[in-house]
Image (tube, rainbow, N blue to C red):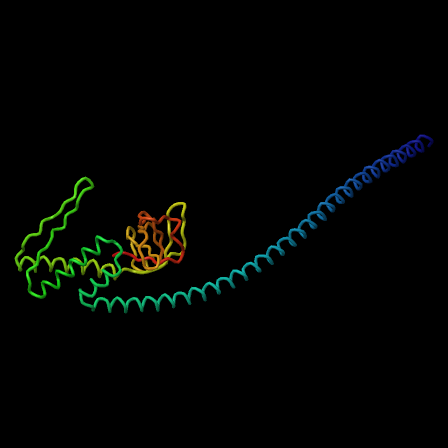
Amino acid sequence: MHSKKTLLVAMLLSITIFSIILAGAIYYHLKEVESDFKNKEETLVRENIGLKDDLTDVREEIMEKAAMLTLLEEENQKLKHEYSVEFEALKEENMVLAEKIAQLEERPLIEHLRDAINTERNRKVRKFLEKVLYNIVLVRSGRNVELEPIVVATKDEEVIPEPKKIEKKTIEANMKLEREKVAEEQLSFLAGKQGKILSVDRRFNLIVINLGLNDNVREEDRCIILKDDKAIAEARIINLRYRVSAAFVDEMESGYNIRKVKKGYKVLIKK
């Protein structure tokens, strides 16, 4: 009987100790779970704060983009209006120039020669045009004329051509060829497209003009730069867009340089 009580007490004691150990293990486990939960909660709170900050930044960026888009739309509307007005003005100017060209084409060759003589700045060319006009008048009058052949003298020698008599038929044939040549050159000059310089890059001798593919301008076309209707330089078209083109200034008249070429100067495309 005594041994049974002792055994029972030992069993109860063992169960009690085991229960205490188990309770302690459960307690420590709960503590670890609680600590882990708090850590995860803090991490989630920090992430949530970061997401709120990011959301605020995104909203501010969206507002800035929206404001910029509004400004760009307003600028686009202004540009559309500005260029539409300029386009209409250029269209009217083009029609006026076309009418002037048509009127010039209807004028007699002698009038073209007279205008060319009045506007020509090169003395040799003007003298030649005067001679052509004089000979045309003489041929029309039926008189024999004396013509001097065109001779180019070198720097080391001066050639003085001797006048010689030419028969009337030969004179008429020569004058016909001269009339056709002068008329072709003059009408070609008059038929050229006229525009203006939009910008000048003096570092690379480049200009941008308001003529392009839409105006039948082609690469390698030559253009004349005019200051007060006086030719001061020539350029070569090197790049084309629909309404504008770039040209390289490769020839300058005496007394001029690229620094004297300015925005707004007239440009005439040679055809």
